[in-house]
Amino acid sequence: MRNNFTIKGASLVLTLEPSIGLGKLGLSRDLDIRIEDGLIVEVGKNLPGSKDETLDASGKIVMPGFVDCHDHLWQTLIRGCGLDQGLSGWLEECVFAVARAGLSRNDVYHAVRLGSFGLIETGVTTVLDWSHAFDENFVEANLSALSDSGLRFGYGFYCQNNPERYLRAQEIKDMVDGDIFALLHICAHPAIESIEELANTFSVAEKLDLSFDVHLLESPEQIDQKPFEALQKSGAVNFRLLADHVVHLSSEEIQLLGTSSARITHNPLSNMRLGSGVAKLPEMKESGLAMGLGLDGGTNDFPDFFTNMKMAVGLQRARSNSASVFPSTQDALWLATMGGANVLKLQDKIGSLKAGKFADLIFINPTSMNFGPDWNWVDQIVFSGQPQAVTEVIVAGNFLKRNGALVDTDVSKTVKKVNNSALELKERLKLV
Ligand SMILES: [Zn+2]
Image 1: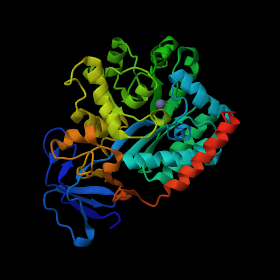
Image 2: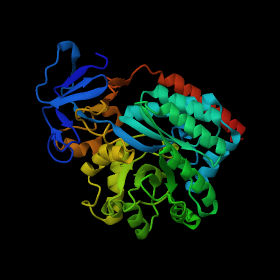
Image 3: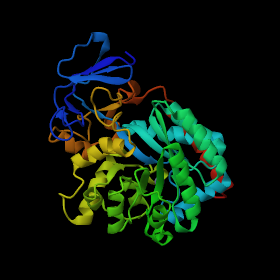
């Protein structure tokens, strides 16, 4: 029963397809899902399935896996660094210092692997890994670890305005083209003083026909760098643009983004940790912007997608003194699945459970200690869900987590390797 099986008996299925089930989350209490060769081939009631090919989901909630639209998996290595720093202090202490000290291939590989374990544990099935790509060793190790993770992934390649990097981008694109698990984004940091570099990098994204993925106005101190103006003058405010954080956009900039077919990621845990502010999600929704959720790497510490959804809901309630503001719990579940699929332009392949899409899905145990009783399971996924409640994680029909445990994974060995890397790094940085 590797890639061909029928999921039967789930207590609740969230298809995220309004045409299959109730409401925009497509809720149904008696749906079966047939999977063949990594694809969903049928969703319906009472599907036939031999005993050998039946996966019993009795008592479980079945839904699409979460789409993490913005992350930096290498930063698992610096988890716990700069806990009381804002963005610029954290970058200086934990990212730029590490870049200067340098990382080995092993440092990067095992950190990304450990980061991917955390994602699988919490039910993420697709991640966009925005890679700082300090050097070629970093790039190779990062790609190798993502490939070994079993996750569906996007590799965000930070080009550093280096012509050699532009050629490398072409090579990586050739490598991932046609790979059902991988895609490539071109990444940059927009600022008015480096507008020429920005325009050069954007032209690479255009030439390769790829998304252009940037951190944008994450903290108030970036307003003086006029990053939005730099993007406009580079011709980059259009359908290629994927802007991360966008906490300090003006109302006018929100409108401009909304009419440009750009997309954004919201990273509430990271924004809270760094004291960056609260993104204006209701205004962005109103403008028509496509949006998804991201965990954003080391700044959010343990990657918990349930808490990320809860904070996406909670921050707006706290900001507006209203419990009915966007996003609702159902909105958060949509953002975490179909919203993320739209943002990565994978809406035809992932994000919902219907025939023709990849079999990327998770099981949640609603009888776990902090989840039950059955009062309103859909809301409870957001407010009471925890990574431990995820019992199965399936990507393209392959099990990455089964019966509550990661498959073929020696977590303690990897933790040990990352710990050794971190200790050596701290010595080189003279922090010990
Ligand atoms: Zn980021």
